[in-house]
Length: 389
Image 1: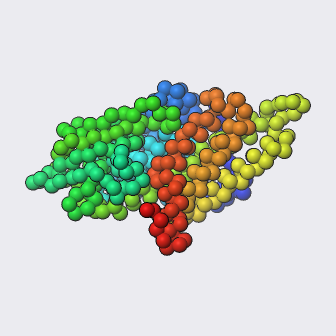
Image 2: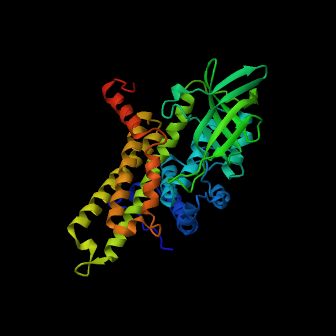
Image 3: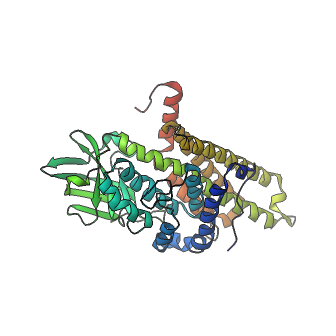
């Protein structure tokens, strides 16, 4: 299996510390040696590679930018580089790590009690326990303010009723971070697998994210103890804060998918001969596409690096991350499409990773806030006028 050479047109590697480069190399080697040999079959079979989870835990990939409880304590640039390499392997793999860390471990770490942290974080970090994030519902999608799931206090318990859908890891999770509307606002709950009234069903027939588990969750008079509530989360700020963490990882992750598509197309065009028995890379229109791709990847790298530094300084804002996700996902989709074009008919074959990345990226464009929603977030930031309705 060939080693990935990386994409570094503007010598951006010079801006990373030795530790940051070491984190990237560890993840890059893991993807080259462990993910690349099996991911095509996983995608074909619509199967998540569960066999990789213990190794990812040992390498510190889960909750990597959290401190304590067995977590790696990476800075946010290191974490971003990790997400980049995992998504170079496959979006499903990065989504798994992103949900486990950013959407399950982060809310327990940030909003949970010390008892909840001690119970769940070490097991989630190691991969012994798996988690999912129950926010999206069939009727509201990108509008969490329209949430219908309800939690009613009854004595020393909470009773939850409602449905969630498009939940990554939903049917394999040991614990679900579930958001529900209570009398005093939106609240988060840790609902364990096997709790009476809590069921999950895997979604089938996906043409994207096939190497990822996606499910619906159902709550019918699901009774959980008061200790299951996340005490520090009240209102939409709680779940939206989690989404901010996940979107940051996406902004880095899609660079990996774009890099893989670009490098596949670049190396193919150098080797592929057509018409005059010259490599197609010698043609001007081919070089134009490659020049466009490497330029856009480089711009995306610079945006991600800058926002990583801002995040480590505590200066990043949700509207900044909206620009990161919107720009970088758009870039990755266009790189995948251009790369598919350069490979001609071979571009649709799963011998190459391009069509898999392209299909996955169509989902990434939608989840964690659609492209349109992030457009409006940026628009509100620069005009002071909210145009959501």
